[in-house]
Length: 346
Image (cartoon, rainbow, N blue to C red; front, side):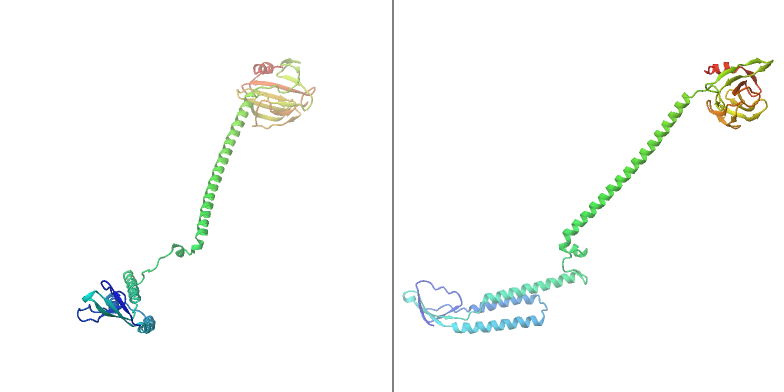
């Protein structure tokens, strides 16, 4: 296709055209082939790639070259069809010039430049990776390591793992609190038991002390008995004690605290018991039906030592009671004053 264009000012050449001089009177600027500029850009880009070479698999290069050759063939065929002359008239008067514009094939400089840049970036990436691997040595790690992967936990398991860890922590804390509470309760129970035992001992001691304080130190040898004979002369002989009449088997008590010296059969008494007290005096119990203590036994005032009887030289069931001052062979005295002096009245 051919055409004529009239330009009323300066001629501006843009795009992919070359201005050819037609009128010799005034020289015209030489034509510029933009394809050469594109090739120059390609040369510069490849110079940058050559400065840092990298080994690329042959299959990748072959496939890339084949694709580029196919694209270049199709582009050149289209450009050849569009290569047509165009006539342009520029200037005024004697400065008018007729130029022929010839459309050149489009070499797609942008595509070539982008490809060159992508290649340079790829080479730089391969080069940087190689240098990192060389700096790190044979065992260098070239990728990020996940802590979850090292622990064998997937990213989707992290919330569950965190919840499980929290539950384990709560369970451990609950176990510690429970153990501490149990130990504290055990200590408190032991302390309470010890305090209760101490209180019981104190109470028992207090009760014993109270009972001991309330316990009489001297008692009447037979409760409820009737005085039938006093201390003194009787039938021409000394009656060395008193007689307390009561029904058979009435309990007979130790008159005061002491130790049993003798217990058992005796001439004239039938059965006899001798008890020595803390001041050395000895009390004598005769004619009992049954003896309930043994020699060496410790007794307290009011303890049962025998059952009333009628054995030996006796005219009826009664207790013959004597007091020997200072010991078994000591002076025999009237038991009534001795008992009275100790708070017991007959």
